[in-house]
Length: 137
Image (cartoon, rainbow, N blue to C red):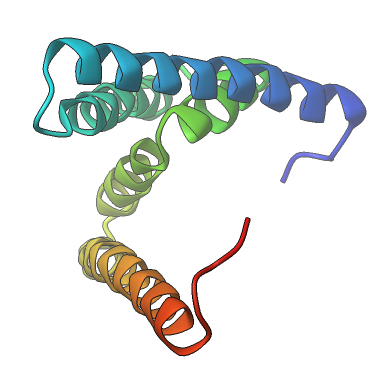
């Protein structure tokens, strides 16, 4: 485990700000030029997972990226660009560690947990506005 330092946090923050900004710009561009379907999410998740796969491949095939690059790229940039990339990375990492049951459980738990959490949040909001009244900013 890596020690927490100000420089590590700053590297993650820099990568995160660039990843979040990139994600926002992708969303705006896709909505402007290809409206009607959330293409940006699909593209961002696919791109993020592809990049996570490249990083995993580097680590698996004895070309491990520098820890600073991993903080900036994986944790910072890809972590804010899409958490789906981290999910994809973790599933493949478990699989390559010969832990297929845990990999499949991770897939199921994340997919169902995400879908159920969105539904729960929606239900809570619906209950709030229907029981308490309209939300105020």
